[in-house]
Length: 186
Image (cartoon, rainbow, N blue to C red; front, side, top):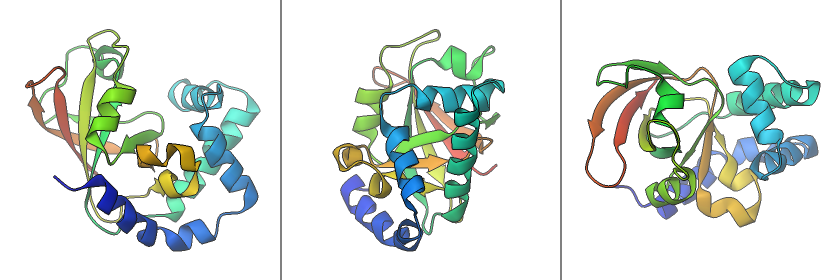
């Protein structure tokens, strides 16, 4: 397993040119994305359900533009905690070989422990799960950890586009919550 601290340092270098090109409104939006205000949820509601206020729509478009500016330069394993498998996949439950399209921006952490402890509770319908995302070279992404609030850097957040496709490669039921391994870009 890759050390998240070492990988974060590599991503700081990989995304340096993208980060240098950020203008103040870009940085302000990234900081707002990280806050516990309702903007995060309003952006996701707009992307998932097609409704929302003009600010949520404009913010979703601006974040998509920022994500399109950066691409992974190395294969990355990232983790995404999911509070509700039922809300994420619906019925029937996911199976190995299924292809899944993420609706809404995909926030993932380089740190498995952070994904579990901060993003899987409280569990919702169907229970919580941990996604292990294998992200290939060239995937559009925004390295939020370097661009955002230093107080949240420890989350090592990498943000992917809404509509990102992934194929389920394994489901492991060891531990307190299942781990669903997914290969991005299917």
